[in-house]
Amino acid sequence: GFDGQPLPFANTGPHTDLGAPGRARISYGGQNWLISGTSPAAAFMSGTVGAWAANPTIGLTRALGMAQQEFGFVKRTTP
Image (cartoon, rainbow, N blue to C red):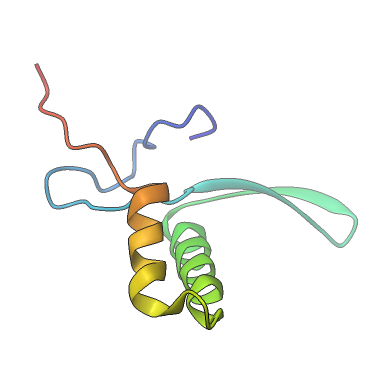
């Protein structure tokens, strides 16, 4: 969410390695919109990693590592 915490509809757990924004405010056609869900999160993550990987000084392997560093979940156990 906007507070940095996973949204209620987010897939979380030990199988989850990355988190991407599932809610965003965008401006389009002179209006502001709130979008949410896994679709904008997937678009955000694939676009980010793709842009990094397209840089010849970064490449795909490093881009994936950067994504893990920037958007990786800290694995926690719930008390």
